Image (cartoon, rainbow, N blue to C red):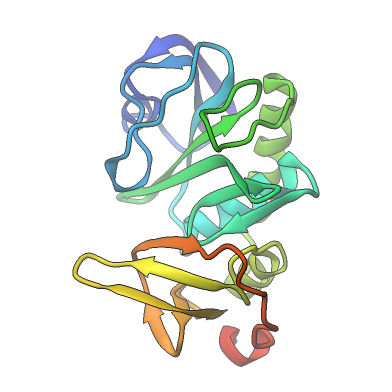
Length: 217
């Protein structure tokens, strides 16, 4: 990938919107970084991997990116539906997938040497991690959907756990039992396609359904 390095920018996502596939925009500092649901993502200069990857449009983009990022960050990383990376149960990174025509923008914010209260940092070198993440994205981007979801499931910290899902007009609690072929989370027999998931502390994991019962072809 061609790397565009910026000392400072309002948002790598904004810069990347006009760039071709095969480009990654990396910034030392974002002054108006945003995560999922337009949340603010802040980090002191040089303490995080703040980047947006421009890739061909593919289904399940945030799951492809999650598997790739988890692989790049190391075996202790677990995945929280739909777009967070966890280290020992604490958020270490967030992903943002934005579809624009025939392109997909994957935004990443990965805590390396600093984290806000309650979050985790990985203690990794930024350039080394960037190289690993580029390689992992290139490997996972063309994979079949079922293979991506199977890999995501194996790293999931959400499946089998009792969760609370905060929807726009209500709250749902139950066991996160499976991931459907389109990436929807199945909680208490109900499909959730968008919402905030809270892992309920002290709630034991249950054995989720085998992937074959949900992934299909």
